[in-house]
Length: 64
Picture 1 (cartoon, rainbow, N blue to C red):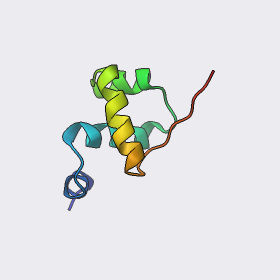
Picture 2 (cartoon, helix red, strand yellow):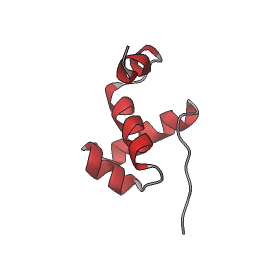
Picture 3 (cartoon, helix red, strand yellow):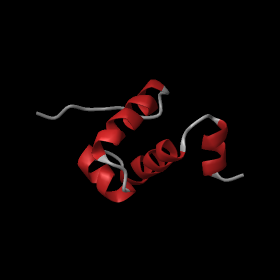
Picture 4 (spheres, helix red, strand yellow):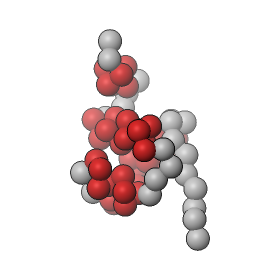
């Protein structure tokens, strides 16, 4: 069983899976950079990241 299948079984959408796997690969990154590497619209990514944070699969840091 591959990781994508496991994440699907956990109820993640394709875009959530894509973003999550890239976050693991990149580590700490900006939404802009994540948008570039995933091809997911930056505005859409905010919603996806919020869902991942609620599920305990991501975190956020505000840099001023």
